Amino acid sequence: MYKSFEQIRDELFADIKKNTGWTDGTSGALAYTLANVIARALRVVWFMLEQLLKLFFVSTSQGSFLERRCNERGVFRKQGTKAKGTVNLTRSTAAPVGSSITQGTVLSTMDQKIEFTVDSTVTLPAGWTTIPVPITCTTSGVNGNLAAGVQLRIVSAQVVGVQNIAVAASGLTGGTDTESDEQLRDRYLYTIRNPLNGGTPSDYVVWATSIPGVLSAIPLPLNRGNGTVDVVISDGGIPSDELVQKVSSFVRTKCPIGADARVIKPTATAVNVTGAVTADQGYTSAVLAPLVKQAIVNYLAKVPIGGTVRLTDIILAARSVKGVLDFSMTAPTSNVQLTATGIATPGTLNIT
Image (cartoon, helix red, strand yellow):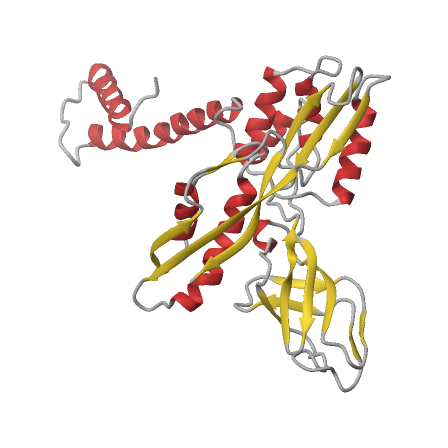
């Protein structure tokens, strides 16, 4: 047990009295002052020893020290990934002249907190009314995952003829945060408690979740017959073909010879939410509604494959938005239990 400042000071003062004969322990006395000064210095040493011991154990370690311990077992912190998807450029009437939106054009959310760049130059011919444009978030993280219908604006040079920009029906997906200490620790402990053993179900979980962008994985042994195993992965939604291929290639380098391993996407379960926001003083429902939608999207991305979408969690996500005093919800009316290979995706989010 570590000693407090008072314990160290009292022990020092007792030693001073015993070895010098000084007995004045009043504040300001020489013996008392010496004991206080030395005790403060020793308490720092005790504190550092306590912290070093915490850093030694994975359960209490953090930051770069935790990474060092995990790296010893071949478990490395996963970096975040960027959200991608399509937005629709629209106008109410046919464009009288053609134009284009060039690669690298910067878009942002209406509050300008999240920015995106256009992936490739897209021609806007004369007569166009709706044109899809591929974009990628400029920074990694779940904040780049936007629901269908979220409005964006052009930050850089204006594009002739564009009246409105909104996220397409498929939404912007694939954005994940850099792995937190807790997530890294959990993954490390999983590998310790489930040591690699020649292709057991837990081995496939370890291999799949080691790839940046993969948030959860479920193995399905013998899913297509003897010698087969399917691995369902999620990045917080339906993963891209690119991520599936990346995980598949890696798993095949690790699985036993002769094993027929396949990485597949989960089954999408659209979660429709209808609710009303009660705004706090100084806020309006119109301003808060899109922020609440985004909070719900972020929550759904955290529900694992085969998990449960809970009403209480949806409400908590909505109420976590600054300015939301209360949130009443009429749909869904009960928890949504996903299938064994199901993942929750945003459906129609009717927030007023």
